[in-house]
Length: 318
Image 1 (cartoon, one colour):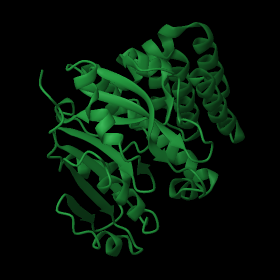
Image 2 (cartoon, one colour):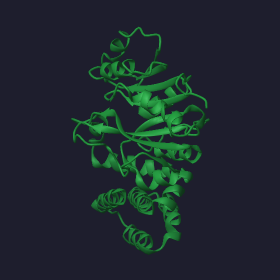
Image 3 (spheres, helix red, strand yellow):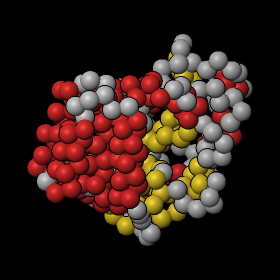
């Protein structure tokens, strides 16, 4: 049996104006009991003293890549993915931490359970609740791509064999929709879930993404319309949801139609209607209702529809 204990793990850490937390994240990586690692830090155009904090570290396992301007977390993650040298890779947010034995626990799973395992999922401790942030799993187990789509909600973490990535990357036009990549990887992976909290997920306070959303309902609406116009091109993602998590799929369709109609994009609205056509039942009723109401300027209707879709998605994820 081949041992995985000497294989290099690449950790990708993206940072934007995180001078106050990035040191804590880096220290947690360097304090790992498993030391065969490289840390790829992508400074995404920070305007605070994040860069000077990074320059304090002289460890040869750290590589710092700096964007000249802020490009967004999705593009920053892709920059990191392009620099991977390790056999395995993972991500760490610049305001989070790994527990000291995190990498060692995960890298040992193939040796202890099955050498065919090439992706390991674990849970996270949510600092605001004191509970695991990932929901739907309660014991060590193998995870199929169907299991992930149907059961898993919330924040999980893990380790992935680099060979599973191939040429695929995150869609940089869809920040926040990382599942569009992970669903593809899951189709190729032999994944195992370790029911342990190996990452500390800091959720206190308001993050920058939340702050940036508070720019008025008009810009939020147009942003949502743009996202759903791009999302309809992610056919593998939508097909996976439609087959294995129809309620979550319907929530996406409702949001897509509502935002498209509110911004006058009839083609996108029609595309989403066609996506749901074969579902019938509740899907057909909801979509028909949206089209009946959607022939006129909808005002607050759109936000009620989007909120309804979010509520449906939350219920589907329970």
